[in-house]
Length: 312
Image 1 (cartoon, rainbow, N blue to C red):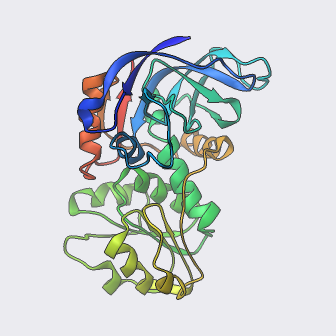
Image 2: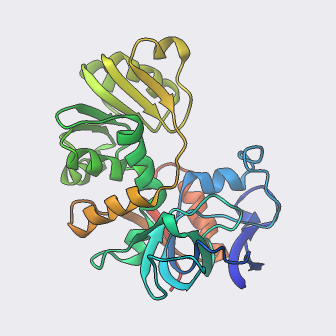
Image 3: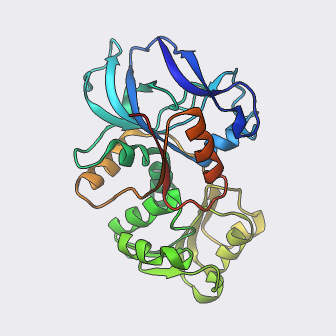
């Protein structure tokens, strides 16, 4: 079927984004078609738009960006058993060139989660990529347990917001870094200690930390090794840790998100119980102009919480 989508036909600046008609592939037997009510912006979107991931994802143009969706199922594949037309869902679909900046998008049925009734489409759309990244860094790779100390860098960012809440729900002591203006919010979300990175070097005030969730890379990542204990783990989503520094701790690795419907449903259940919430800093319409503005804001790395695109 044909859908309106915001696409790129070449790599480059935000001005490459434009509205177009796209012919979606035929629905697979274990896939559903979702009417997109909201999607969100993540750094992968504009990194891919700029061409940084061209070797990893050598796709044909046009490319529809976006890998978060919240919406309603309008069609199901022949073998889909657990989902019906009309259900309200959200997902991190597989990474294909048919993304979610569109009126309709295709999602594999095992990647779907139910949208809780107490959560808006916008709040749900903010979750999948960022929430699953936080979940997998903390638990799948970081093996975070109750009673442990975790440092989450850049707690007010799109991923950090969820990481703080998930770590707190797991019974960890949560430390994070953020500018002064975001301290009250992060404490409300569950941070036990918030360090102002403008005035304080975290590596001089912390010690015996069990897990560092690195969302910054570079010098911040290197300094994080100073505060970990011998059984400590450093999980990064921005760059491979230095080999020599990695030898000083139990685990040091860079991870890449794997879409996962079961884990997303766990987060959905926490949201239904009011234990996890989305923090949406900015909302734009799902138009070429709206997406351009959203990308430009995301690329500053100074957006608070998540940037959401609405398609109402």
